[in-house]
Length: 503
Image (cartoon, rainbow, N blue to C red):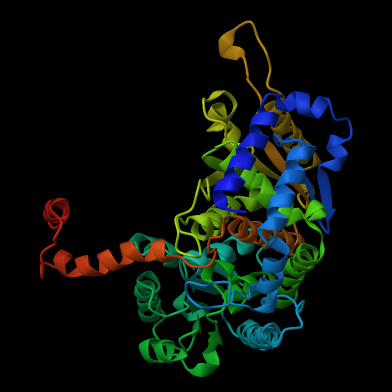
């Protein structure tokens, strides 16, 4: 089925469903609340408040089957070349499980297990030292995933190490990160796949000078030679990365060392186990009961069918406040493409703008626009059933707000006063974790990964390259000599701005 035909049929389905309001769709199908929900391991997801019906879901699943979703999932797990523009597999699933019989996937899994043993040795070595603080230096996929997991899974009291993150090339970030730390009791991790990332190299240089010697400097990289030569790091303190794992999928690898240092290696492996549980579900479950497929098809319905240009992710647990930042990169870097795998332009839109925050804070900022603004913004609401905090009244209030917002988004409220009327009809998905544990977080993130991949399969784009990230870096490199007064910029506006920046 061509893109044009698929879009035509999708819009026909939307036109059929759109004449019925979301509250009416829910009211006229008494079994919908139960049937439009799934429990997978520690995750429960309800799609009952999405603006589609059973026939529309059946069409979406049929279209996904026609796009080869099951076959492309198997190809992903088997280590086939799914990243066609770079000629690579994308074997992040092999980092956390052994679900394929292919030699490529099994070899990758063996490498992952060996890297885990290296990670455990580093954790044990540092635990036996006087080091109390870890500074993790990376950016993008080398930062956002580990930062989220550490923030979400670190308990109310610090573990053996306090883990800090440094990503931004702005010197104030380094200054603030290092303030109050003792260089004699601090170790640094430099995380860069190529060891050519400007931000990481500059911040790494600051850390190396600040530490005073190289004995507590570690690297995680696919370019061992460059890490060794640029920073004088011996091979026993360099952990591996591989070209078959993209940066935004790398937190399951040695890039997750900051997570292991923050929560312990056993809990890090539980984090991998949660992701592996989701991997098995996604690979082995038919589309009609496949959580990642249902999530992906909902995203396609909302973006391509209903035309909603943004998507919110709203976590009702303060420990997940960085989830929207992480998903923003995962989704938009993966799906922000305008060219199909065969080089032809895409039809329609491949991705909304992802953004969000944490409830209940966001209820007092942008929720006004979500309830009464002119643009409809679909949302993923993320909640946690059981809390570790010893404040049950707060947790009940948090749950009350989570339930109230999803209900109000869908149903709205009429009023004789137009200023107090709420249109409703705002679609949302609710995802509940049994508790926020390494396993449940691993399962949640893996679900989003597979949802993204299945969306890319539906539209025939590559979820694993990121050439759009490179252009700005290339231009910035050309402008560094101009900022030093050693060259002139070609662009006339840039030349004027340079005069201002140079005073």
